[in-house]
Amino acid sequence: MPFDLATPRLSLYSIPAAWFCAFYPNTLRFLVIDKTVGYDNTNPRDNLARSKDNDKFKPNVVAKIHRMEGAHQNRNEAFPLWAAAVITGNLVGLDHRTLNICSVAYIGLRLLYNHIYINHNAFMKGWARTAVFFTALPIPLWLLVKSAQKSL
Image 1 (cartoon, rainbow, N blue to C red):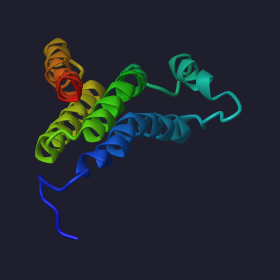
Image 2: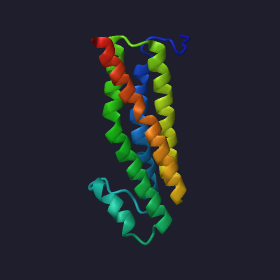
Image 3: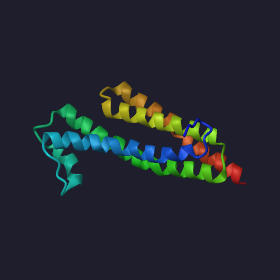
Image 4: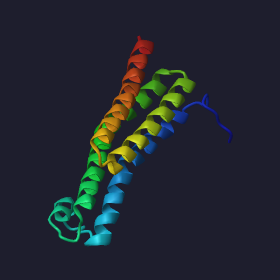
């Protein structure tokens, strides 16, 4: 089935894509810990602390593991807002092209955010991450406002 940016309800696929943006940093963290010292699935929330206290991990790897966790947590915090914005926009009948463009932009920015977050190791890259975060943040808020305006 061919589709373009005007395809109805295509934006709904951005919801599982946004979930994936939260899930993959956690998977990367799991793989690093499992490869180095073994993942304790009995106490999964203790693995982060185990990485910090284990001599098998170099300090830069421990820092990266913590950034992976940070990217995962940040995305989990942002996910409900995105899902609500897309669902609400579709329910009230916002323009499909608008929803789809916003979806592509948001997912792209969130993937870039994760990449910078996980791989940064310098002060200025932290600011780049912040800039990407605040570029993505207004997108779901704008969709919610447009949805509210359309529903009146």
